[in-house]
Image 1 (cartoon, rainbow, N blue to C red):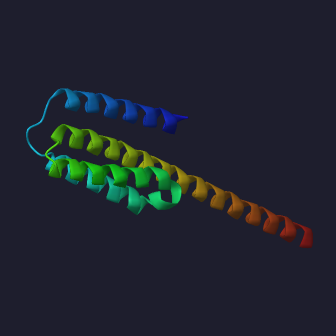
Image 2: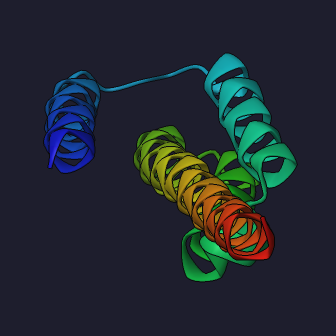
Image 3: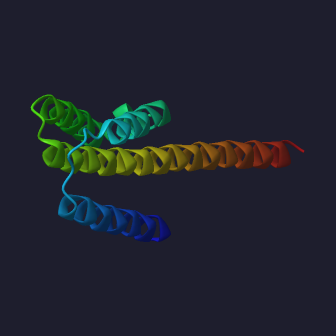
Length: 127
């Protein structure tokens, strides 16, 4: 529940930022924004986004590629919008990857506890 709330807060903040960036026309290529978005995508990949959020990380990559194409066409406002969307997708992929890993760890811990309990019960019956 708390994870979902944080996710919605991040997405809301991203949408607001996107709106502000869109309102302010740009005459310079958003190279720093593209670099930062690429870094967020790489971080998501390192967290395991391919396994836990394949659609989101794929969408992030596609939008970043489209943003780069927009820069080549000198459509900087479009590039900024696409980069922001790509970053939001990558951040969502990070959140899903972290959540998926945590759920996997919980399942592994539960299995370990189950095995230990059965060993304890077996030892108690044998004594």
